[in-house]
Structures are given as structure tokens and as C-alpha cells.
Amino acid sequence: MAACHSVDPAGWRVILDEAVARVAGRFVRAEPRRTAGQFVEGLLSGVERKTCWSLAERAGHADPQAMQRLLRTAVWDVDAVRDDVRSWLVERLGHPDAVLAADETGFLKKGVCSVGVQRQYTGTAGRVENSQVGVFLAYVTPHGRALIDRRLYLPEATWCQRPERLAAASVPEQVEFATKPALARQMITAAIEAAVPFRWVTGDEVYGADPGLRGDLEHRGIGYVLAVGCDRRVHVNDGRTLVRVDDLAERIPAADWQQHSCGPGAKGHRDYLWAWITTATRPGEHRWLLIRRNRATGVLAFYLCWSPRRVPLHTLVTVAGSRWSIEELFQAGKGQVGLDHYQVRGWTGWHRFITLAMLALAVLTILAAQQPDTDPEIITLTVAEIRRLLNALVLTAALPPEHILHWSIWRRTSQARARRSHYQRRQAK
Image (cartoon, rainbow, N blue to C red):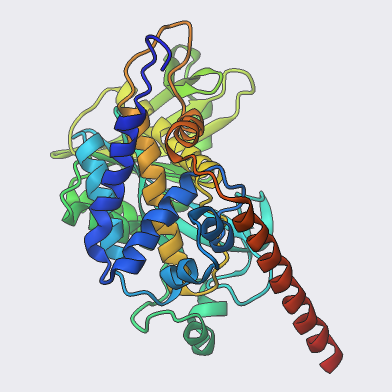
């Protein structure tokens, strides 16, 4: 190992083994328990596409059946594994001033059979596409950030009102339609019940526009900084007048705008001009309208803020900036551990794949969090670089040529069988 290098392959192996050990008790039989460990290592590996076929080949299996059973029919408690992931991350990253960030991400799909799929807007594509949408909850602390919960969004008309589609996708009978903010409330409630330490919640306009979410947080005494649209109206003049937030922004004197960083970005600190307006102050609560202005373009963004105690402007700015963490986690999840590489259609398979991907991402998060400060001449190890080194130093596994050739034959045989079936279906029409 190079002199003065902070990388400890043996220590990294311990963290990876700890991740698998944390969830081992959730598997009834030894085979899926062992396969789950191989699955997580495969998600962390350099395999280009994290499908059951490619992960099985890397693990040395003769076929993908064990990996497919793990996602479909093996007996294990996926929500309990999710809880284990969350508790592990809280142990490693927990902080009383942490922020919970809620956001959704899209998974582009073909066809109409994947659970929850329909043509809908997704930020992943930036337009309306055939996709599934998952709502996630991130835990953001000074020590690191990670995904700690997930919910699959089921559209009301095309899924929740179509019992035959729900049954075909094995959606549990007790699952009912819930809006994205309602799903976020479910996850926040679960975090509270699990005694996750945090003080704030943040989210984009989808969540800021929901009065139920805001009211629930206020009732629980949890502060929030939630984005809203420019047409939102707020009370001013002691609550007697409703004014659009963009109209209020035009009235702010130039001297009242303050420059603050809302966190580091890829190109340095995210510096913006900020202003805040007190919209209500009552015993036991404080409300503000927070306004962000881009220094170069002048584009404005607006946030409704509430806290049971008075806080400085910089605190609200920091919480607002925490929302970008979950978007960065989506990028890391999809780019590093194949969060969107799954090839499953049903409810069970989706939740199992996503949860195991969250566990793999938690490994990278914890490894990144424990890295010491480095020489100022080089940047701290990134999640992407940690995964590259993890593969080079810990996960490297040479496969014999006959195994590689076996899988080449397996793939081509299966593809030929699928092609024949496709041609037969077309001819039967």
C-alpha cells in the first residue's frame, strides 16, 4: 500500500461483511442469505449492468435462478432489512440536527406490466415518459448522507382503480392510493417511530404544496423548509393580507439580500443571495418565507419555513441546500450500485432490489464518512472512487475461462429461445 494512503482494504472488507451480517437474520434459509451477500457485492462490483444474470455470472453461479428467487419467491422480510439499513446508518451518521429530505425519482420502462408504470412526468427524463416513480427519504447529516426509506408510487386511475392489474403485480391488498407527499409522511412517521434523530424536513414543490404534510410536521414540532411555486400566497401584515410570494420578492430592498452558501457543490460552494420575511410569530412557533436568488441569472426560488424556535437565516439556508443531497444520492445510486438496473415487474421484486441497492449504497456512504482529512492538494475520496478502489483491492474475483464461456452460451441460448417465442406470438396475431 502506498505510503500515507488512508485506504485500508482489510477495514473496508470488515465494513462490507458488517453490512451483510446486519441483515442476515432476516433470511429464513441459508441459500438466500448467502445469495443476498453475493447480490450486494455484485451491486458494488464493476459489472456494467446489475441484472440477475450478470450478478449470477460474477458470483460463480451456473445460472441466474438463485438471484431471481432472491427477488421473487425466497422467504425474507424486505421491510425489516430496510429497517436494518436505516438503523446501521443512524449508528454511523446520526446527528440531532439532521435533515430528512423527501424526493422522487423515475425509472424509465417499456411496456405496461411493470408495477406502477404509466406515462408520467419524471425528472429523470425531464419530460413525460413511460416510467415508474419511487419516493425516497434521505438522511442528511454533517457526517454524510444516505437513503433510508423508499415507497413505490401507484397512480390512482391506471393502477389503484384496476384491481386486476394490482393482483397481477402481486400488490398487497392493504395497499391503497397515496399521493407522493402522503408517502413521504409515511416514511417520516416510520423514522420518528424508529427514534431516528433529526430536526428538519425539506423537499421540493411537490411536498411544499401539501398542507397535510406541513400540518403534520407542525403538529409533531418538526421544523421544515419546503419549496413552493411562485404563485403561492402567504399572509403578511399580521395575517390580514394574502400576497403572492413573487410580488413580495419585488418589494425587498437590495440591502436586505444576503449572500450565503447552501453547501458545497461539484464546482465549489453554492453561493446565492437570500432574503427572508417573517410571515407569523406565535408562542411556540415561527414562520418565514425564504427567497433564493441566483446571482448570475436572477432566477428566484421560494420556501415556506416553520420552526418551533427562532433560528438564524443561515440555518434555513443550510436546510434548503440539503435537498440537493437526495438528488446526488439518486445519481450515486443509479451510477454506482445500479439502483435503476432491475428487471423485475412485480411489487415484491421492486422493493427487494431497491432495498438491497440501498444497502450497497450505505456501504459506500459509511466508507466515505470514515475517511480522514487528506492533503489539501487532493480531494477527499468520492463515492465513485471508493467503489473503484473497493473493486480493485477487495472484490476482485478471477473467473475461469470455462465459466465465462458457459455464460456466453447460456445468454445466447436464452436469447434465441426468447426470439423464437417473440416470432411465434407475432405470427399468431
